[in-house]
Image (cartoon, rainbow, N blue to C red; front, side, top):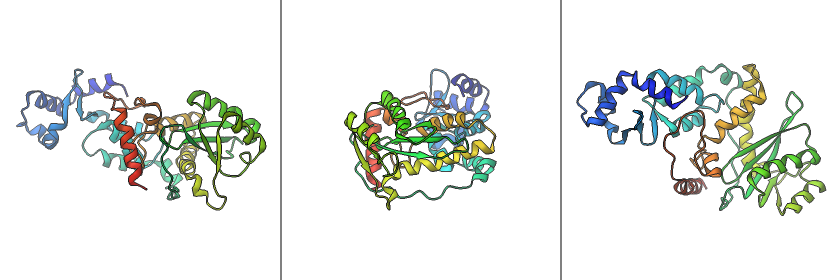
Length: 306
């Protein structure tokens, strides 16, 4: 969905044209705008003629269902989809439309609701992004591939690489690829299974100055950061199969949605915390938020949940 589409649809929407006039003229006596009167102090009009509620774009009626469909492309579920749309757009009864859309989603109903996530063992939030990482595998998939999953503890940003085996000789080049983009972390946390318990993997971490940490075998929640990610990841792959979509393409779409959706623990998206500027997803953004305040917000929200 482009800004040009929103401008065109706003100019064709009689209610929003009336609302735009009310905002500009500061006259709220028209019956058309009475339902917006309680939030009038939050509303502004951009130079493009688009209406904002705070920093969120007010979506014209003709585009509302499409906006929700875009937000639900990765089948993230009701709460995460609400978080995504609440971050970027607004229209009346938006939450209800999200709920109804997901309840009608055949793929979501076929896959079913995910189990309640395991509790995350209480740990201090790192001072900076990409210092402490969690790593694990998802699979094997029907294609006999595995997914190497790496999660940043601070931002919850996931990196996923497709591998043909879980051998250290296969995993290490993929870690090199990830570290080439984001840098070398201080700690890499995993379970104590293969290849993480092997000498080749340990020597690789040692050569980079990375400290390995292992979760207790009988306490998988110790690596729950990555385990929690596996549930929506698995759902996305299953829905791709149901909808007969190429799973690799759907994996990329899922990652875009997940990375740009505010997390329940921090209330900030992983991409925003890792990369600092707000990352552009498929829903438009007009105003970028103050990143210093967003890091502060994330820390405060994290602390509330401990």
